[in-house]
Image (cartoon, rainbow, N blue to C red; front, side):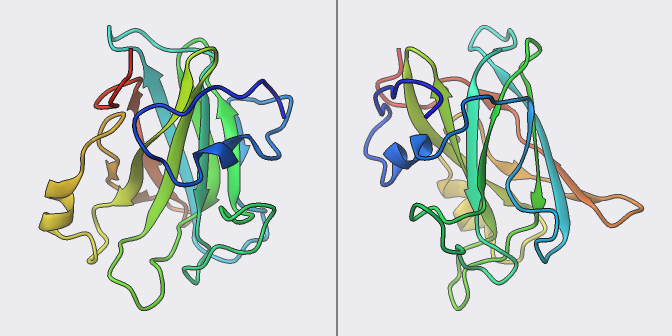
Length: 182
């Protein structure tokens, strides 16, 4: 574990304590959620983390986990599966994940998504809105309207480059719409 665990804030969170399991000691601004050889369409997530006053937040840990290209969580050391990773924002608040575009859960009407958590050292950990994709037909207006926009809204606008790589952006505002955040 890279740091001492901090409390879970923002209400009940199934599996929030798992963000610390196998966390590397050394984190960088960029990380892979999936091995390079993982089947699926490549996806790059770029974002910035902001304080509520609009200034960039450095040294914030962003944790993410997701399904594979078939919509399942491949077995790993936790129930989050093996497709997971951590980044640590730089002084400009930037972070980046390289991964694949996840599939929706097989046989369910839950849109494609990537789970996101924040670890603020000396403060707490909390989940934020998942990254979802506005071109996913399973992402209905009703589901968009139900989003609480924890840490900012996670609906992304995927764009594919000339090499077939998907790109999305997910900016995060620390504490935004997180109950009990101080």
